[in-house]
Amino acid sequence: MPASPFHLSALASFFLLSLLPTEAAAQVQALFIFGDSVVDCGNNDYLPGSTATADFLPYGIDLPAVTGRYTNARTVADILGELLGIEHFVACSRDPNTKGQRILNGVNYASAGTGILEWTGRG
Image 1 (cartoon, helix red, strand yellow):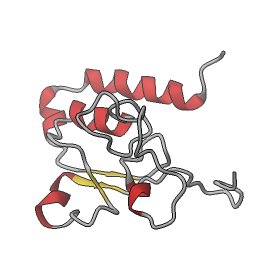
Image 2 (cartoon, rainbow, N blue to C red):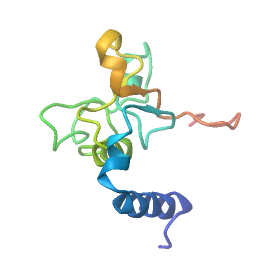
Image 3 (cartoon, helix red, strand yellow):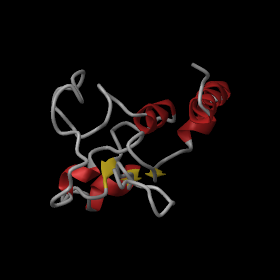
Image 4 (cartoon, rainbow, N blue to C red):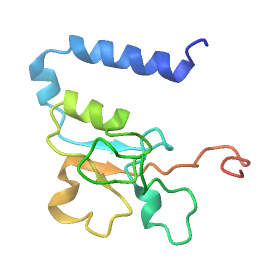
């Protein structure tokens, strides 16, 4: 199966980040993330009536607790943040605790099933 454009761009991004001097990565203080399930940190878990959730196993199986991420552990955004020196996962925008000091590392606005096309997320 050929690699998708997303996978190729993600690989290219990680390669380019590995070339960054440590001082450049240290200048990044926050990430603001927009996207779909590829980078969703669990925002859909906070949407009343949402059927697009990942708050059950096997999602998050390699983390201490299920987080709502559509992966077994970290998302691409989590890994990118780590590579850039962000110490903690970026806070989910829909989490009621995302305020004050929690937003200093940035905010993750990603939500599974989102898109720019009218038919996105219609099953």
